Length: 290
Image 1 (cartoon, helix red, strand yellow):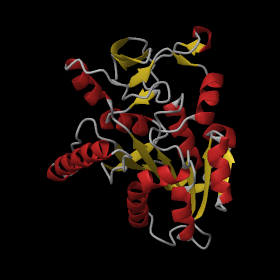
Image 2 (cartoon, rainbow, N blue to C red; image 1 turned 180 degrees about the horizontal axis):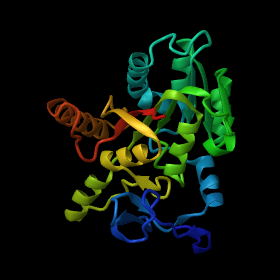
Image 3 (cartoon, rainbow, N blue to C red; image 1 turned 90 degrees about the vertical axis):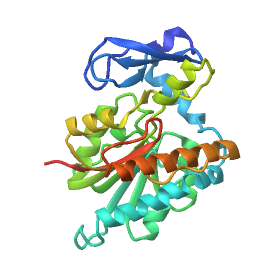
Image 4 (cartoon, rainbow, N blue to C red; image 1 turned 180 degrees about the vertical axis):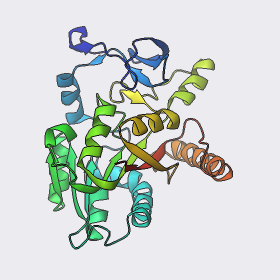
């Protein structure tokens, strides 16, 4: 754990409660579960300055290069392109090109796909190295948080955030800002992990793990908790789906991911989209509610 002087105590970001129970301690960090709403969050956590320093060098495991990241995310990106094409038909933005913001765009893999399809797409990211790599591809990217970017209201038809919400210090505030910069009826695409069920099982079996990736991940979202947060910040849910899984770099991890995805899709299909497998990442597509 980092120096205690850089740590801050926080309440639940969803309901404001300070009553929480311990889920797990990993690498000296504590993941707590709100007693009122069920949101899982790190408490205490690094302050804003410490987190910003941390993200200058942070890379998800197995993604040390831009090529690693692109390979891991490619199936998810390609699937999202198809879903956006279905939910936001070409030409629905009028004569101007449709506009998209990718928050936490990393090296720009998703931006490149949307730009190739005629979208006016731009991105933001906190990593100077990632921003430089994306700009080298000719993409419009700035080094900034969403709040610092200060985009005008109703600037975008779609805002995407792949594995970003668990990293920000104020997820509810982030979603309110997404809503503000979306055009009326605009689409938010939010991809998050759901690690808590796996951690609970491994804890029961007394198997050590660091699956939460704390303090890089500050939150963990169940589909139900994310739905409530989106609805309370002004969105209407279109669908929540496992989508295509990421391609893990190690073969064993890859097969575990594929097996989890197959099970998740079976649950999703048989329940007509009403149920979701615990411990599997999901993507929620939600429209700005006016």
